[in-house]
Image (cartoon, rainbow, N blue to C red; front, top):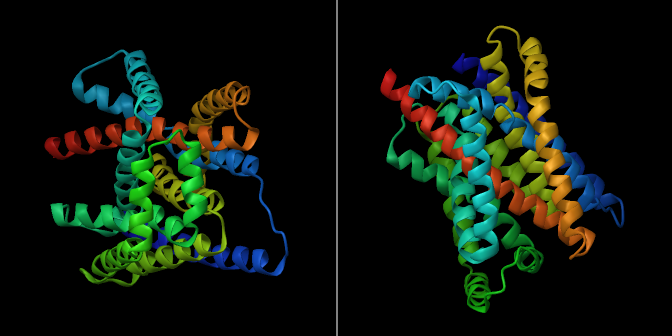
Length: 314
């Protein structure tokens, strides 16, 4: 199945690369090309979070390994972790943001690339982290002030934090970070080279293109929904039906829909609540990034525990 995933993901990366170029060209040609933050939210609540909506099935599989038969315990733990992250973000927002950016970088780098990498070494894990940091560094490099404005909307009011950001921006540390991310892509690309690894560079250039032409929110939405989430979804579809991707897609939609709707409703309720205290667009940004952070940590923890236990069993 691994070779099939590589081929499908290469085709997906090529289509995503074409899409990013056409999308960027349209925005360049059309003056005042604007995409509402609400559109970004709706895309994230439908396409984006759907790739984590089978976590209940993965949780069931993990609990079988641990010998736990009550699936409600999984939901309680998952929701508890998510709520804890939200509370921590309110109490210690700067530390929460920094940890989230590091964890997200590793998650993006690993999930978008690991199907191409056979060796599971600490060196490769560090390459995943550096590669994934491009998702964070590119918007800061191309749209520094706008990215800083988003951080401020995420309850970050520590002046030392912004002095640090100004320091890394004025001293070209962001540029050097992108160079490191580029080198990590090159190493992952050339190590045990095969043609299907062109996926890595198609993704790399796509990420740079969308971050150059679009605001951080739009660029992140395009990446998160149409690269990261779809790629993870493809793997899940093939796990549901290894021989027929179309049938796997139908099964994925059927199984992912309930939790996707539930999570979207939770986000929209949060948006309604926040809109009583903040502007509508500010509320959307808070819901997107703090909400995704609350889901990212239990999602990554589940993936880690499942992968660890499956390796021990093998």
